[in-house]
Length: 387
Ligand SMILES: Cc1ncc(COP(=O)(O)O)c(C=O)c1O
Image 1 (cartoon, rainbow, N blue to C red):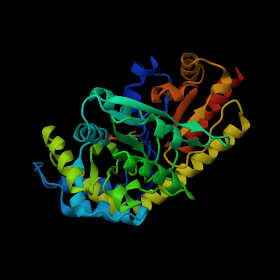
Image 2 (image 1 turned 180 degrees about the vertical axis):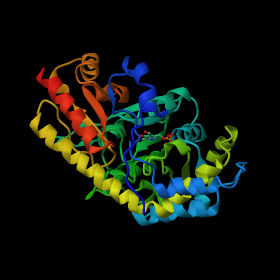
Image 3 (image 1 turned 90 degrees about the vertical axis):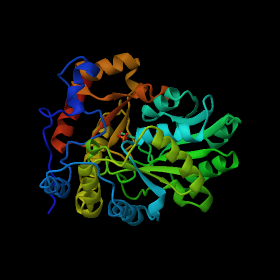
Image 4 (image 1 turned 60 degrees about the vertical axis):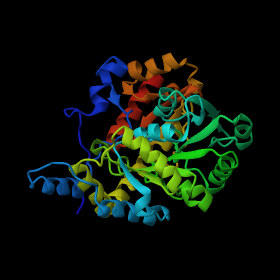
């Protein structure tokens, strides 16, 4: 039976610790930034990898059909989306796939729609591939829910707009886009011949009653106009295996994408990652349920804390283990805010501004830690505020 365990990672090579000095100029912060978890990868995955190591050769291997089928079954069961085997290909990284897709479906100088705030590599992939950012601001409505504005977006589109980079669910704001929102966005893209790249890496960390809807599952037209990026990295805390998939139903788009993937020689992945991937999707279901229950309980702790500290606002995320803290009422500049968290509260969070202009005045807190670590962090913040 899969145990659910919290691990002290301070003596491992975990990025959240090793980059502390560089990012926060001190080791004396509780790191709650990079989006991975302090929760052990499911034991079934570790055991399967250990078993594979009994065979002493780790040469080149092909990702097997049974591994792809395991993911297909997971997506069908959890998101009601039926993927065909030939639509899928291996990728070592969702971000790398975004880069490939940008090159495959647009030319230098073309525009790519990116919603601000968003996961920082979205900006980097567009700029580094010499495309232009078409920034669309996400704004909170009067209930605090972030929304895009479809009419405004319509006016922003030009003949050079070729791609939409969608984050679904959305990091850092924790939105699960509704069917109506996705349909509106999808129809706009179809009208203007804009290909959708949908990063759905967070699609398994969704809290009821919200439910993730793959945009490609909404209609045949959208299926044929979308590149969906999915993987077990967030779901099972196994980003270190560098394995994800790219799902493209359209033969035409898939051929263009594959040409780019060959140019950078994505290959077919690593033996241990294949085993981890297949095992996670076939045997990790029970662990995943426990994970969601734990994350939900931590989200409640944050909700209670925020209710007692109105100077910091936070709408509990519909998805992701990332809390988007609205600290604007503190009246600090972004630099002061960052210093306050590091120096006064001893907390290493992701500054909102790193997610784009709309993130000014916010901080992103990763709550995929034990409840005691989270409570200590909130106590530290409480003390810093009282000082
Ligand atoms: C939205 C989003 N996409 C992609 C990634 C990273 O994916 P990969 O490690 O497969 O490149 C992250 C990691 O935080 C993310 O939040």
